[in-house]
Image (cartoon, rainbow, N blue to C red; front, side, top):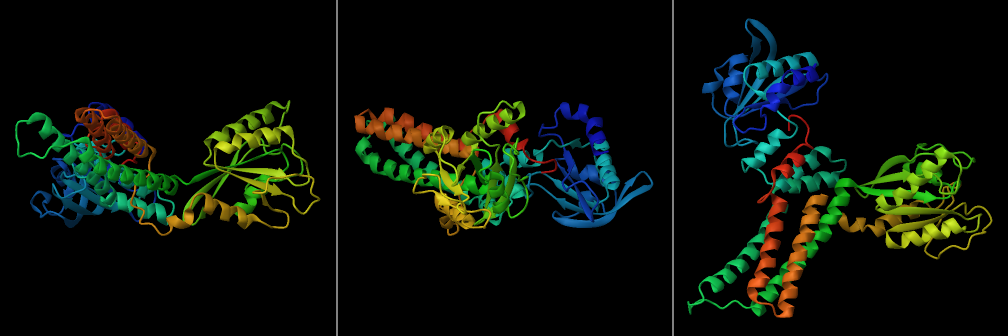
Length: 466
């Protein structure tokens, strides 16, 4: 029925639901059977619209941030017994008038309340439109908006903590501090360029700004490193388990997950498609991907699985490459091992309970899945490779998505070019160009500069009602 409501008002939506003059509404809680559902309304007419269907106090005259008991009615028919929260601008999430109708959690009841709100003048909100309005009205910046969606999607306590830090503004403060230092340098350069005739101005030279730029470059480098850690906390670590058929890849997946996720047989080529499973290690999600055994085959289905396995190598943050202690290295093994030198990997030798026929690298981890030997060593190596113990001790105040990290790296690139300009003896106005570009890229992270396409794409990732 909810989708019928969406279709019913689709024509209205396409006429401009993202226009800031419209009052928007949506169900903000998960649609289903429950004790309570919330229908959220935001905009200049929010209070008047809800007041039309509310039997109780006159909501247009109640104080802000108050809750009122009454009924939602359609003409003379009572639809539901409700509590209505009235919050007046600007001290609301969207910085607009906001009304939240707390109704009973039945699907039919919640949909009917939403329908009445829409028929009385509200527009159905698009996904993320409440948060989008909060950004456009200056209530939050883009980093804080990221914090909201990350908090909703957080699967671990670390991810939750990091999201709260983003939402609180502590991460944005770091970006703003860098920008403020840069703008001070830019301002002093501008004064020297525009007003060279003033004798009482301190002359700004490349040599004078060099120490400050070096300090800012170190701060940027530190923030990039920590933000890449933040991406791992937020998204987890993707780990591909690769190897020839029948070396124990599916058995290892089951052992790591401590459940029978993958089918295990003695028949080569049993795994034809990827099988996935997750665990939490030191507060970080590990996404394990069991792949089809890599070998030459004429079987069409198995061949597709082999190609998928090879593609996983480039998509994974870590590769666990498995070898059989009871079999010598093959040409295929050597080729795959040579590909792994450019990325993080762990070499695992399984079936150490059988006679050794393999000449393996010294760094390999020897295990016997059959006898449950060595599994913890793999987990310990993952902790070491990704420095997960260090993450336990940090405040988790940094960025966590690919867009922001890419912009940080672009900002550092321009700052490095400014430092290179100074080393080359270029005029200070040339140096200033790269400093300004660095300042601008940092501004894109928090949304000081943005495109409509970016904002639409970003907030479309939110759920309805948020």
